[in-house]
Structure formats: structure tokens, C-alpha cells
Length: 248
Length: 223
Image 1 (cartoon, rainbow over the protein chains, first blue to last red):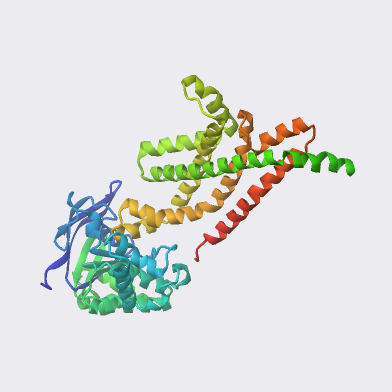
Image 2 (image 1 turned 45 degrees about the vertical axis):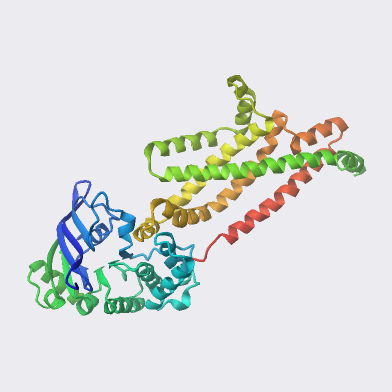
């Protein structure tokens, strides 16, 4: 069971106005795995991630989440999106709602839990990210790191099958990055399946089960972190990884 | 000084005419409330229709808003009251004034709310949709609450200026404050009723202005 893919991407293409951003992506994420996607800016990492819940409309290809083909015309997108949590670079918390309101909105409106049940689930999610003491705060009163942890809680509260992270720490001050990465590590230990687009190479190296290197709209290389960072097979991967190593 | 008081603040005349002015005040208040409710609701509806992204709908809304904002409300009132009977659409002076002002307010309200919707970062919608909220749920719970808050300051100004336009109803013989005051002034040969009218407007609109101020502070959220 733990070997079955939760997320399967086959032959994913995406182009904007004739400009090919993704040129055939094949990727499988198995249950409980943390897969990190690295690569230079403009390599299509985020676009690929946003195709996984169809925030971007793929041009071609198949995406299967927990057995559901999300490209199928009869798939209820709002139904399947509950299985796919997403965390954004800019947090995208709702500024007019409290922390609790942010986490409870979809619990009440999408999953139709009664108030009491939604509250229990929201608090459980907020506890997991260590934000239980801020339930009544508004997003504007929180630091970036705290906001991002609430963003994670908003996703996991729906008990998704997979969580997508789109550069979750890129908008954070350096001293706040650690707390968010720590929450992500704990999530992984709790068994969450995660696909993470990131520039945090140290995190990818230490925490990922598998690392995917993308460039020019294709997956150049994927493998264990030791392979990608220690003994990359492809010249482009080597160049990217060594450039990173030189900078840090 | 004596002469000034006698002419503009004549107690005897004020005592004689204030019940009429009070009745006019009732009409003005009723008309204003009806205009505010209808205008804001229609404006909200138009902004939501425009937000659906349907081309034809959007163009229709834009055309409506641009025409209504360009026409002087007075002309709209006159057309509705004097011209529509020729196409078998007679209406009372109250209805004509109400309809004209509501349409104008709706046009401005649509523009303000639309601006609020546009100002929202697309990430707000994406976050909502990513949790499975439908388009209309996203609109109702994430987009509009924020767009409306941004629209409050321009809207309160517009509401105040449009409701003061209820005075335009006097041209179609609507017995609101201004009309009653003018008639009373002519009858009395003394402008004191006009001063009463001015007082009546202050009595109505100072609380409205204060309410608007309160709304503008109350509806800001902590950033």
C-alpha cells in the first residue's frame, strides 16, 4: 500500500501562447514520500506544481491523484482539490479572517462539517504547525513564518492525500525559514505525502526521499538526494548543484 | 440684524410651516433609504456579473455603468417621469426619482466594487479554489468581503452625494424637503422655510456622514 503512487504525472505539457513551459513531465510520488523539485528559475517547477490541482490548465498529459484522473471531464474538480493541499510562496491567507477563520472556511463550506467539528479539526491542524496560541490573530498581525505555518494548517486541515508546496520559504526572512521547514519535517514524519518546489538545497538534501532536478521544462534527473547532490549523472545537474555549492 | 433674523429665521413662520417640512423630511428619508438599498444591491449584482468573465455580460455592465455615470441624474428623472408615459410606463414622481437615482448609484457602486475585486491579488482566489471552494463560494467568502471593504470609502461618498440628489425630485413635484420648503417660502413670502429645509437636511445627513466615517474605520482590518 505504501508503494502505490498518490500522485502520478504522465506526459504533462504546458504552453502559453506557443511558448512551451513544460515539455513532457513524468513523475510519480508514492504515499508518505517527500519529493523536492529543484532547478533554475523559469524551469517550469511551479507551473508543474500548479498543474497538479489545475490552477494551471495543462495543455496535454494525464494527472492522477489517489486514483482520480483530474484531467477527466467528469471529475469534480472541487471534490478532488480537497485531496490536494497547496501552500503558496506568498502565503495567500485571507486577511479579513482570523487564523481560525482561515483554517475553518473550507472545512465548513466545502467539507460541510458542523461548526463544532470544524473547530476541532482546525485546532488539530493548527496544533500540528504550532500556531494554536494565535487562533484569534489576523494574518496581518503575524510574522511571515507564522503566516506560512497557518497556510500549511489550512491545507492539512482538509486531510489531503498529498500536499503541494510552491517555494514555501522563498518570501521569508532568513531567520524565519527554519520554523517552516521544521513543520514540514514533522509533517513528513507524520506520514504526509509531499511535493515541494524549493530553493532550500540543504532541506532537499537532508529531508527529501527523492530529489527532482528540472531545467527547460523537462526533468533532467531524479534520484536520491545523495545522488543528485553527491554524484549527479547529468552535466546540467552537476552545473546547477555546484553553482549552488559555490554560493553557500 | 433684526431684519436678517426676521427674514431668515422667523419664528412665527417656522412654527406655521414646520409640520410640512417634517412631512417632506419623511419622504426624503424614505426615498434615500430605498435608493441606497436598491442602488447598492444592483451595483453588487452587476459587479459580480462582470466578474464572471463572460464577455457579453461584462460589456453590457460596462456600457450601463458608463452611460449612467455620464448622464445627469436630473435628465434621467425627467425622462422617466415625462417621457415614459408615452410608452405606457407611467410612474409616480417618487418611483421615477427612486428608479433614476438607484440606477445612477448602481453604476457607481458597480465601479467601486469592481475596482475592489480587481485590486485583490490573484493568490486569494487561487488559495480559495485550491481548498475546493467553488467559484461562487470563493466570491461570497473570500473575494467580496475584501472587495467590499476596499469599496467602502468611495461608496460612502457616493451614497451621500446620490441621496442628496433626492432634492432633484422637486422638478417632478415630489413633496420632498426642498419642494415643500420652496412652496412654503413662496406662500409665506419669506425664506424661513428654506432654512428649515436646510436644517432638515443637516438632521438627516450629519448622522449619515458620521455613520460613513465610523464604517470606514470599523471596516478596516488589521494588516
